[in-house]
Amino acid sequence: MKSFTISKNDAGQRVDKFILKTFPKLPKSLMFKEIRKKNIKVNRKKTDASAVLNEGDVIELYLKDDVLEEKVKHYDFTGASKKLDILYEDDNIILLDKKVGLLCHPDGNEYVDTLISRVKRYLYEKGEWNPEDSSTFSPSLANRIDRNTGGIVIAAKNAEALRILNEKIKTRDIEKYYLTVVHGRMEKDSDTLTAYLTKDTRKNKVTVTEKEADNSKKIVTKYTVLDYQNGNSLLEIDLKTGRTHQIRAHMAYIGHPLLNDGKYGKEQGRYRQALYSYKLVFNMKDTGILSYLDGKEFKVENCELIQSFKENKYI
Image (cartoon, rainbow, N blue to C red; front, top):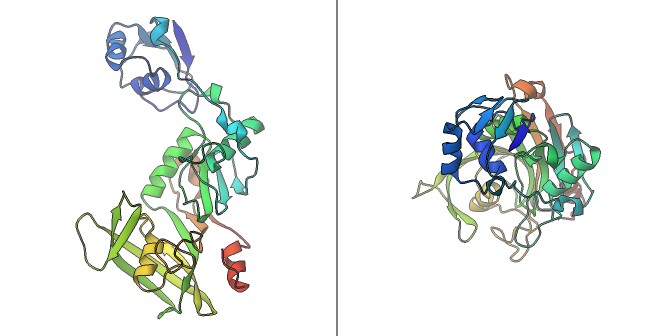
């Protein structure tokens, strides 16, 4: 028999979801059978698979040990770098200034030293998070930025904050603003561009067209010119839709590709595109534990992209 007391980060889940995440070797059919037979109980009472768990609930499983082997926890994050550029932190979130070159999550070439691993190490060493205290939640990033793009990434410290952030990003209630340097002088000081974007997953590349095409999605990109220098334009981008490579592909489509963009621009083989996610504005009314963020704006001051533009030294 094993028993678990539900932590704050595990609360809000269905009984069946929690059990299957905690015991990956437990067959789903067996789990449902044992729930019906009252061999899996919550607070010493019969439960349903769809029942939602609350903080402090106690799950008891009267099953054989061979199917109650818990998911193995690996602590590879302890090998990540300690370097983090924190813009803001409270009990629920951290806003991080991710530098160009750092991965948000592991890929085929880098597994340990990623932004999320650094966040986990930071919170673990601060004593704010311990993998042993939660079976199903670990600190997570609510948004991500390409390796060769820098800017603000939001990390959630608990499951409730992550759920709220995911929903608000989906509904675009968290506004994202980017800085970019593009080739040429813009024809207008400000404009809202509309087109259609089609993604080729195999090539990890997108195509922009004026008219709707098969499997395309509408994109809306608003730009404002902040400065001109040496035949290039420094723009603020208000991203109205958040599609893959939207800014890079859309600006290239209108004849103003980003500097150092080897995929959509003029500098073939260079992948340090002049793009930075430098500002977030939170619209968070009636969001429970994150309501205090409503109306708040966070910005990267002294952004390196602006400095590089002024000195004509690009990323």
